[in-house]
Image (cartoon, rainbow over all chains, first blue to last red; front, side, top):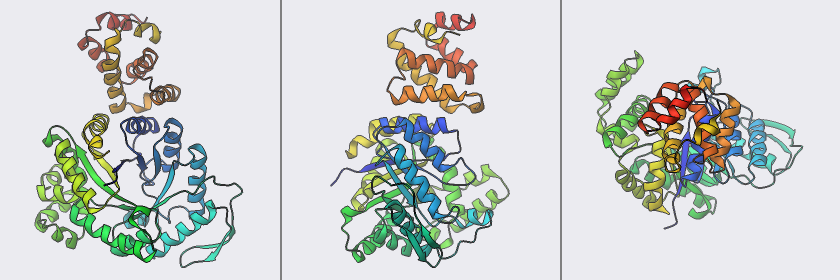
Length: 332
Length: 93
């Protein structure tokens, strides 16, 4: 089995220097990839990545993930290509459909997500290859856009996906697939869908970096690991449709109780409603040994990169140290 | 305050643990707004160069930690039996 790559996700809720310090620490701890989330409410993803580019030496980094709607794909391509000048060959684009609620909050209607992602990636690849973009797509139009500068290397594109059609398309057109899930059954399904798309494109599994983008929490004390994961899982449960909850045999009444509590801002009640089944379905959390076991199970399914996503642990710095000293060496 | 001079008072074997402790205070602080950008950038450069546990790296962390979390930092110096250093900080060396 090929060595598993490790990625880490940071949410730029904190100033650039804190995230950059964590990025340096992650690089020194053996992480291969750094993913920065993109949400208008937080710090800008490209500025955050630029700081990481300047102060790191070898880690690969990218958007985890951006979407085609919030900014025109031409500007996304321009930002990523410019980052590639700061850190040549260490930059990737992570692109997904975006979050409906977030887009609605800024007045953007999310229509035809498959076409939007496909066309945005097509524009990205053409522009960063020095080509002129002229086409009339289902979502985007371009009438001769071209960069006045060259991109030194091909920049890999990862497609963020959850639904079957997006997963299939991700396998077909992506250099990587970012699977937003933590449970083996969800990852298994996603890998199957991505493999289907890869087959259609005549690709082999080695051509695509199949990445599990998980909600993760590690601590030597399992109770502390659970405590850190609980708020994140509460929000995942609240945003999950009934079919997803039923698939994981989650008590719908408990989920409704949790949603109701979150709606009125009663966080203690919402957190108390999080069950072990919910934690198991939507996170990987526990001691380093527990996490190693769960990550190994995902590797057997066919992932080639494991992303440690929010919350990471009760103390991010200590958790990165723990992952670097106890978990990553088991997979290298 | 002459931070490099202060760090001269730290025995070599305590530089690593002190660096870890100070960095922890800095990264978990809620007083982020008090961090001078120039100091933050020097700290990141030291980390990038692998010099954050060296005397010059610890000097930068001392300055940042005393700016962001003075009480916690002074308490940590006491716990780490760096009384002479704590006194020098109080005296504004």
